[in-house]
Length: 470
Ligand SMILES: *[C@@H]1O[C@H](CO)[C@@H](O)[C@H](O)[C@H]1NC(C)=O
Ligand SMILES: *[C@@H]1O[C@H](CO)[C@@H](O)[C@H](O)[C@H]1NC(C)=O
Ligand SMILES: *[C@@H]1O[C@H](CO)[C@@H](O)[C@H](O)[C@H]1NC(C)=O
Ligand SMILES: *[C@@H]1O[C@H](CO)[C@@H](O)[C@H](O)[C@H]1NC(C)=O
Ligand SMILES: *[C@@H]1O[C@H](CO)[C@@H](O)[C@H](O)[C@H]1NC(C)=O
Ligand SMILES: *[C@@H]1O[C@H](CO)[C@@H](O)[C@H](O)[C@H]1NC(C)=O
Ligand SMILES: *[C@@H]1O[C@H](CO)[C@@H](O)[C@H](O)[C@H]1NC(C)=O
Ligand SMILES: *[C@@H]1O[C@H](CO)[C@@H](O)[C@H](O)[C@H]1NC(C)=O
Ligand SMILES: *[C@@H]1O[C@H](CO)[C@@H](O)[C@H](O)[C@H]1NC(C)=O
Image 1 (cartoon, rainbow, N blue to C red):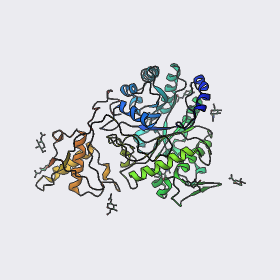
Image 2 (cartoon, helix red, strand yellow; image 1 turned 30 degrees about the vertical axis):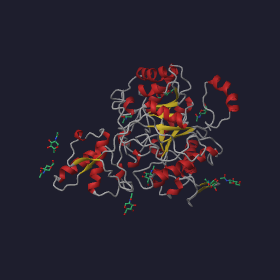
Image 3 (spheres, helix red, strand yellow; image 1 turned 120 degrees about the vertical axis):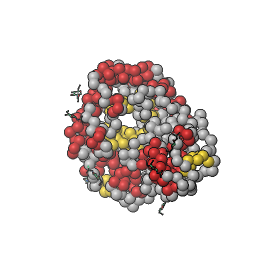
Image 4 (cartoon, rainbow, N blue to C red; image 1 turned 90 degrees about the horizontal axis):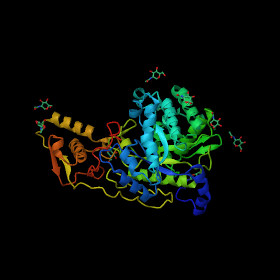
């Protein structure tokens, strides 16, 4: 909708917008830009990319100063996240006040359009649960709200996104409820966001849920190719998205918040690292999803409603944790080098187009690192170096059903060596890997791409140790 409002409705809404400081008119489509990658696009390139593609909303995972700087006066709505690694060192209100002042208040005055502040991320998720059990969410949420109010920023809402595993397993949406072990905390959380008018933010990974439930994988797409259907009273569900969305609506209704605003904070389809994670499937998923949002049909429990969502994500992230699976490093609509992988029309007009390529990257020369394959190497040393290279770089393409799953051992060593070599700007000396050579013959196979990366323009993220990784 954000690209389709007629000029008439804009002019009619203008006084209203100015009057209440309200910016939203209708549904919008945003995108997540995670920066846990060795080869990051620089912030000004990303601003350029968003503007070129008509993407007006972005979620950042860390409010790094130099990233915020790039968004001043762009009219791109921003979500910033206060990460656990920051929050766990917060002991008093003044710390959050100072943080919100320097990163939100000051930047608002510089013309950055903040939409939400996320306080933590998926605190109740089952994955890494024991390690994560992050207790302070509600207190920090309160403190953040307090800070935003102090600086007179009532339109910037504070909330915390959740993963779908906060919901119990159901056979139909009307059974939707929150997990028993977190229900108490969830009710406190809901009370807190309801009091401040903040939305419930849900992260949906259809590829994860469809396999977890053992559903037909076609059910995750929107093109009705699946015969699978879930009937719930008078409602029937022909795709996973509406099924999950209404399960959440039911859970919220049972908790007493049947009308609470829901934002889909992350949704997408990965291109590697798992069975059915591929570029054709990602294109197919997004095409159906965006047609669905453009139709504004809503879901059986919330018919004819706009659904606001943020796609996951802008680029791949080769350093992100893989707690749900190796595919988590392959959510990007773009590769690390700023080249789009498939067709998607962010403007919701269903045009058959690839988004524009990032401008200003520097691609390294066509040189690959490889393992020479000689048999006179100390084998355990080769194995050690192979594992080291994978650990320091990214071998998630070896996952079951992934693109490099079928390489021979020698080829896998080459792949790992190349990955490490590319992220160290093709400097072989940096890693001293046994049997490593440099070659100008592309070792890629028909399925498995040995990438050439761009020069790391941002070796240091301009931040402190706290922000460096994001
Ligand atoms: C969570 O909070 C409770 C008290 O509110 C405390 O006893 C417990 O140790 C905390 N757990 C963690 C993991 O911080
Ligand atoms: C949050 O703030 C509200 C109102 O100021 C208060 O009632 C509530 O106890 C606070 N909750 C926490 C967990 O600090
Ligand atoms: C839901 O089902 C999955 C897969 O069977 C299981 O791992 C998970 O623990 C279940 N969750 C709940 C809340 O029962
Ligand atoms: C949620 O907030 C709305 C609006 O302030 C209020 O009318 C409603 O009673 C609240 N719901 C609950 C369960 O507290
Ligand atoms: C799929 O089928 C449903 C129910 O028959 C229909 O409402 C919807 O428009 C169809 N979607 C597509 C993309 O064909
Ligand atoms: C289903 O629809 C029928 C006919 O419109 C209606 O009588 C019935 O109450 C509905 N059932 C539910 C559970 O909504
Ligand atoms: C091979 O390398 C391993 C690990 O570094 C080492 O322990 C072993 O002694 C080496 N073997 C030979 C024959 O050099
Ligand atoms: C790998 O080999 C298996 C078994 O031969 C085959 O089913 C699969 O399609 C292959 N994967 C790729 C990516 O070629
Ligand atoms: C490279 O690795 C080999 C084998 O472990 C070792 O003998 C050599 O000293 C290393 N060279 C450098 C420069 O670290």
